[in-house]
Structure formats: C-alpha cells, structure tokens
Image (cartoon, rainbow, N blue to C red; front, side):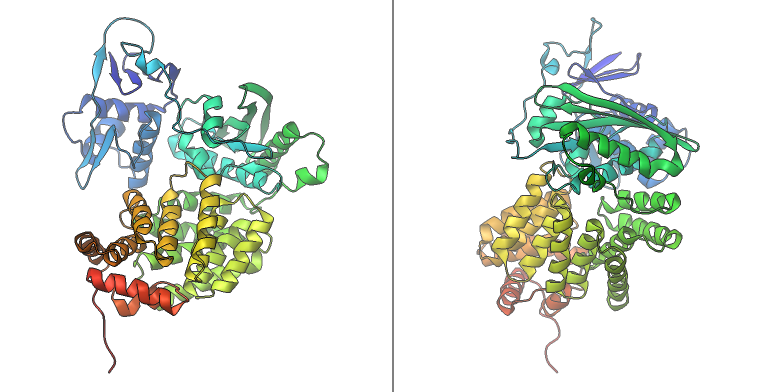
Length: 531
C-alpha cells in the first residue's frame, strides 16, 4: 500500500519513503514509527502504544523515543516547531494530522498530479560571501543503530569546528547544517538556501573498534563533485581521521594554501575517546534546552572531565548548563549552584586559552553568573579572534553587550550570528537576544515581536516571557502583558521585582528601572520592602 501526504509517499510493502522524487533513507524503527502514526492518524497514540508497536514493549528511554520522533519529522520535512504533520499532544502522546490519500497504480514515487515531484523553491536565496564558503551536512549513520547518531553528529561538529578555525573560510554553523539531517537533499538547493559555494556530505560506519568515514566535496553552484575520499581507522585514530577530512576539504578549495593554513584546521578537544564520548552525549542534551535535558547533560560533562581533567570544552559546557538553569529559574540552591558554575567556567578558561568553544561558553557563563560583563566580553572577543565563524560567540557576545547597555552593538552581533547560521533550530536564542536589545533601546513593538518568535520555539524560556510581558505593558497593551505574566508566574512563582538584579546582570540603572516598571505594570509582585 502506498500512502501520500504533503510531498511524501510512504510505500508500506516496499518499506520505502519518498519526498518528491527523492528516496529518503530511514532507519527501520524510524520507518515503523512513521507508518504506525500514519495508519493510526484518526487518534492520539500514547507513548505506550508506540513502545508496543515499534519496540515490542521493550523499555526505552524518553530521549530515545524523542530522537526517533524527531527523525520521523525530519524525514517528512516537518519539525517540532511547525508540527504540520506530526503533532505532539501534551501529556497524551502524538497524532499524525496530515491529509493522507492512497496512491493507486504506478510504480514511481510521485503523488497523483505530480505535484510532489516538484521541489519547492526556497523562500529566499542568500548571496554568496566574498570568500570561500562551505556547509557540512550531517553524515549518514551506517552503523545500523539509530542510537549511534550522536557519534556521527559529533564527528561532523568537530569537522565544522576544524574548518571554522580557518579565518578566510566562511563556514555555516552546525545547527543550520543539521536542519538537513535525514533528508534527501539537492546540494544546489542547499547552497542557495544557506548562501554557500561548497557542500560537504558523507557517511560514517562505526563497528567494534573501527570506524570508516566517507566524504565528498561538491560545488553547490554546479552540482559537480570536487573530490571524494574514504578514511578508515581504529577508534583510537578518530581525531586523526577528522583532521584528514578537514585537510582534504581545505586542499580542494584552495590548493595553493601553505601547509601551515591546513594545520590550523587540526584541533583535538581531548585524547581520551571515552571522555569525548560522554561530551558528545552531553552536547546532544544541551542542544535541546529543556530542564530535563539539562539534568541529563550535567552529569555527562562531569563524567567527561573525570576521565580527562584537561578537557576545557567539557568544563565550559557544564558551566553553561548552570547558567541556563539560573536564567530559567530552575536552580534549587542559587548561591551554591552559581558558585559551582563560576568554578567550572574559570577552569575552562585556564585550560582552554586557545579553545574558542571553551572561551565562548565560559565567558558568557562568567558574565552572567559572576556579573563580570567586561571580562566575559573580553573572553568572547578572544574566541572570535580564534574563530570568526563561531555563531555562538557572536550571539552570546550580543547578550553580554545588551546587558552592558550597548543594544545597537548587540543587534549587530545577533544579526551576524543569524547570517552564519540562517536555519538554526536554536534561533530562538538569537531571537530572544534581539528582543532584549530592542527592549533596552526602547523599541517595544520590535521587542515583543522578536520575543514572541522565540517563545513559539521554547515556551519555557523565562526571560523571553518576561520581555513579552514588559514590552506589552510599556507599549500600553495591558491585556497581552497580563496574559504573559500569568505564564511567567506559572513557571516561576517565586520571582519578584526586587529579584531582577540577581536574576539578570543588568549594568545600567535606567535599563533595570525600565524592565522593572514594565514587569510591575504587567503584574509582577514588588517583593519585600525595606525594613
């Protein structure tokens, strides 16, 4: 039976999935999950239903289930934000909500009428930068185990990082590249959507003790393959293999570069593969941003530094988890947890003076947890001197500049981050920064507009909800402000106006007064007075 929905056709007999005319690679359990959702589209299916149907009742973790649902969405061109086809029903489960029809006759993948065979044009075509530019797409995991996706993803992240150290090369950030994961793509379209000349794609197969990486560099303006390589080795050689891929790409783009330029692409975060494995698992949770994911990420980063006490990036990410807990009101002992975050960030700076990732996350954490905005900005500026393509350094630097009272400079930083990572699934952080900067610049309509975009992606982002409430109140929209305040009070009933300086590192008294007045008008309690 062949079922058509959107631009997709699902062939249950042949176990094939097509988007347009392109076959989509889907792991067996991902395919089974999609088929079950489509066949049961008239009802909400619970977590237990999915475990019985797809995993035979075997107990699997929430993160495994979530990763498979996300893989289904990516395969059919949906997302957790849009939910056009697969909708999450809070506390109930999931439901397939797309319109489905049965395709009768024919052997091809197309939907009757042929519309699914016509790829939609991107909404906008980004111009090419004035220097060589590249996007590294997620590598296909050929290991046969979807739970090994994190390892393939981590290898690609390190290749992106290595390439980003080359200052003349414009490198698209990891999160924009990863929007193409589990999708059959036309590299020429990718080049237009991301505004790059080159695309690197590949695969990774991990077997006990060994790994094989294949990679091919494609000129996205023509679709012509520039080079293709295969790299085999033991897991002990994984970092050397990553270096080989990065060096091969650099050489194909500009073979006249001297060896010293290629060597700058070679950076190993740690010599301990076990520590690195824990770090990758922690990063997979950190990208999600929920309270539950932070609770899972922190012990994984701790495991990484226990195995490799010199692993600067792992210390920095652990420190950043503490910052994220603080800004969302999740800390149970603010003084103790803030002190631990500061300790970890200082260790990261000490150990990672030439590590832009460590400097970025630890510098931002110190700026927020310690209130040292100047010191934090100095660390972020050093990170950008080492890696000018690091989108996180641009947008986190924007936050610290906004808190320091420089909203226009902050907006420039957020804009640069968005250009480096135009399809970032965590764009909500950049949108939140834009909202903050416009609020502090007195542009309340722009502030509420940006904040509401961020809210749609992460409804638990406490600072964003505070900006929505304050900007609406200061613009005279009391009903919208009160609605946002009710949401804020649900998430953190302890927050009061008198807590603002402890909550957010606002330097200028006039900025603090404006935010306080907006939240006060929206209905935030004042807090204990003098005496």
